Length: 524
Ligand SMILES: NC(=O)C1=CN([C@@H]2O[C@H](COP(=O)(O)OP(=O)(O)OC[C@H]3O[C@@H](n4cnc5c(N)ncnc54)[C@H](O)[C@@H]3O)[C@@H](O)[C@H]2O)[C@@H](O)CC1
Ligand SMILES: [K+]
Image (cartoon, rainbow, N blue to C red; front, top):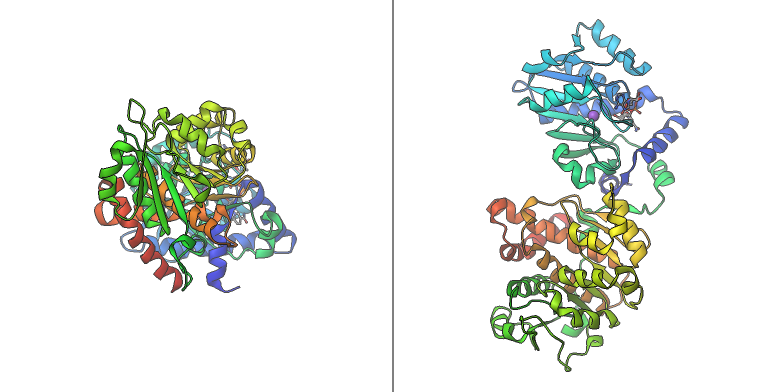
């Protein structure tokens, strides 16, 4: 495998602490000495740290040393940086160290490097390395370590965590008492699940993977040939998008999506969903809205077929006109701006045999009817796109006390037989078989009213294209690709316009530029 393919493969992998330990054990059992692995890891860490924090602007580095091999890594990095001319100060608040860690500490002390139990002498450093705990952390931090963590978090000094910020649970990303709030996290070998949990993001800072040549066979032996939990990468997202259209195609072969959205109260939801669907490249776009929105929407989306529907007194869609045949569409996306008055329409689409993307009030109506029994009656695939509040309404038993978004979404998808996409800073998507995708790149600029409507439209258009023509791309692939694309548009818009400047309408204008940019990168 070429280095580029290896890197792409590693970027997709996610491990729990138990899986990492099994992989590590296989390497040791095969004959690689533990000390040699530590040297290798730390050599690569030291190179990266020098690139991120070059001399002379960074000169004095404080190193927090814990009892295990995370502390050992930190000591070997400290030794290498010392020989590169950095001034090193150690803080090791524990007396019982693992043997290898103790040996390295002994050598550093013999080199004349000062090691303190207190952290106070490190207050004037230019950079702090956090080697207190890695994936071996198994309980809540207590004094004096918890105090040290709290003290350094107050200092105005960059903090670089080795493997993961000390104090974070490796799998759930939850804070065990307190945790280092890192500027950078250099994750070793394989991405730890906890770094992809929303609760952890405040602590993780800029995260990077440091490859240390774990044999792929050992990864596959533990995670499987097709690991069920994966990160979304640009390559796999781009591969699932309908970018190359057959030369002799026509509009009906490129999918026909029906959007059902909007109400007099939430007229904008229909437009944003429509603009998202338009960007998907779908061959035909039909939008069912309350009759009173029809003329305004026709002006704003001239290429779409706008279907005016009878309205309730409050201006919600009362029913679909008899002229609409649901089975003639390749996909339906339903929900944004509907209000819960549109119950009859949602019931109607649920009984259709058309692939369905459900969002917003579409989800609330399903939750009201009982999620699992309602979805079990469906013949065609369903994609649910809840935010956390909607997820709790849809799956109250699963959401109750959930500490890991990945396992919660996995369970929700299995129980409901739908694809479940849980929105958040790190969107998690699972199919009913338990295959999970986590989108690792996004922007808080997307935390804004209407950006979900854009996603629903985009997904609707992509799903319609998938079902319009036979393809080997799975529905999960399509949903992860749409999620990635939406996030990339947010990132590009935030770069050009600041995070404040990414209203949902603006976001739709960045969908195509973001894709154009990424596909050039992806094919280079
Ligand atoms: N997986 C791998 O292949 C490699 C792992 N390495 C490093 O080794 C680390 C894992 O090493 P370890 O297994 O020694 O684990 P850690 O270094 O994370 O620490 C575990 C030690 O801390 C103690 N401990 C756990 N929670 C505590 C708490 N709240 N308060 C006080 N003590 C606590 C444990 O009893 C144990 O002695 C990784 O994160 C990484 O930095 C690298 O050295 C080399 C390669
Ligand atoms: K650490």
